[in-house]
Amino acid sequence: MGWGWDNTVFLIGDEYVFRFPRRTIAVGSIRMEGRLLPKLEEYMTIPYPKPLFYGEASDEYPAPFLGYAYVPGDFPIGLTEERRALSAETLTKFLRGLHEFPVQAALKCGVQQDHRNLTDIASRKVKLEGFQSKVVEHLSPEESGVIEAYISRLQKDRVLAVNALLHGDLHFKNMLVNENGIVSGIIDWGDLSVGHPACDLSVAGHCRIRLIISLRLWLSAPFYRLKAAIRYDPPSLMPLYVEEYENSTE
Picture 1: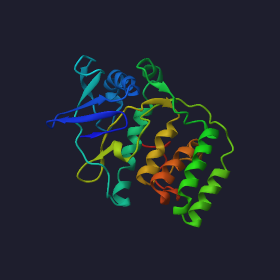
Picture 2: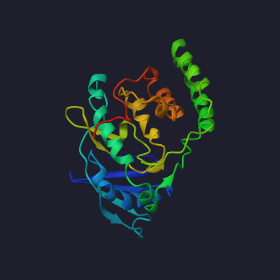
Picture 3: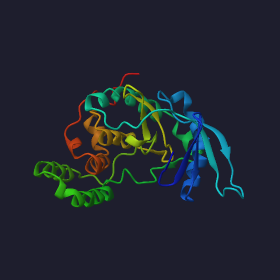
């Protein structure tokens, strides 16, 4: 099916998907997924790949691997903004359920805590300024002004710690949609982590789904949102409108 940064993925018939780690760094993630993903079922509102087969390292393949139930769907590419916005409530409910999973149970399964330092605003701000310098020639003066003003408002070095289980890599190629363009599957759980729930909201920058996030929650991860916006979709720097994540319906 494809090759990611760390794993090679094979589709077997139309029922199973197998992921084989190519890099040593991915072995721990495979083991962690095998322990944790089965425990998420009662918290999930969107289909996700559940592990069914557990392979161990051998002379034939030197690393553990997993076989999952296949989740059908297509990447949300080429959809209109109106069509994408139809998935906002679906994604909100999904994130609400995921973030309610017990943190201690996740840690016991091998999930790491903020291993990418997403809440370290000071270091992320430096990286963000580096991203801006690389794309500035492709931005309009208005867009550059918005970015510079945004960066200048980042005065905190870190945000108040809030722990929740995160997908950790919720961009458009880790989401699947059905024939109506509605999100119908979430895949690639190798970056599961414990951290601030706002970090999973980068989906708004990647997919341009119009979400209104409360200022407190949104500004707690501005580096993450803006990084996604600059790299993938400069127009998404405009205000994002839809119902608040914090007050989502059940």
